[in-house]
Image 1 (spheres, rainbow, N blue to C red):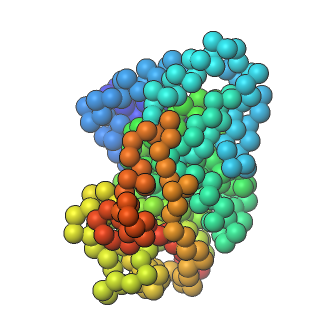
Image 2 (cartoon, rainbow, N blue to C red):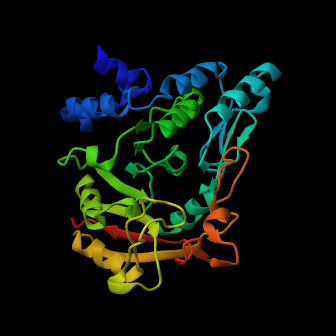
Length: 332
């Protein structure tokens, strides 16, 4: 009973996940890890967040659009003024919202990150997602997962250990009701080693948070079918000793940045992990317009993380955030 409660109370739509044949032999594995991650004893705010989900008004969207920069679910005229106020209040209570933007029945969630800008940089370079099974590692609220569906993916699994992100996903999914996208509150280390059903695996904004980056790439490799594609987006630097910048403490005020690699080093690590034809398709310096404070994320953001006198450096003196996108394939 306890396992079922933790698995389904805070993540109420997992029946569709367990019904998928590619996961059938791993039910016990996933159930145990999901129950551990979603245990209210580990997340004191979970009951409060669930209360905000429960406070969302019942409504049926007349329109759902997943292939625009803003994920659109419902129109303002689909709900009453009272419902609009209830919706806005409950969604704001789930702040901070970091990845988006979303438009739910006329309530526009202006997230910290303009995640659509990253998607615009990614999509020209990846294989057509039509009819593909996709995994998004470190998916956040799931913004990019919705965009993957909008670009034709057959099924998307997003994983992220943050329960706040899981609850924000629940808020959107309450209205989208799209069983082609499942969210699991787990990390890549919780995925079964012998599971490899995915045609495309995304890892965006994760590699530099891993203590051992080559291990992360090997884990991604193992989740791909033969001939599948990895889409890796990560912080990069132009120059570093041995191709790796290792911050001594914080980087842009983040404590959990373990290593930032050059383009050449990243390509080398992908090759070492077994991928073929790894190459960098985009480099971009993060701007103050792409990552910023908003009413939906009113804590410090990039502007406070940079040297106030020289925005080419972080507040700690490292090169300012620059991100690279890499594409590679698993051999057939």
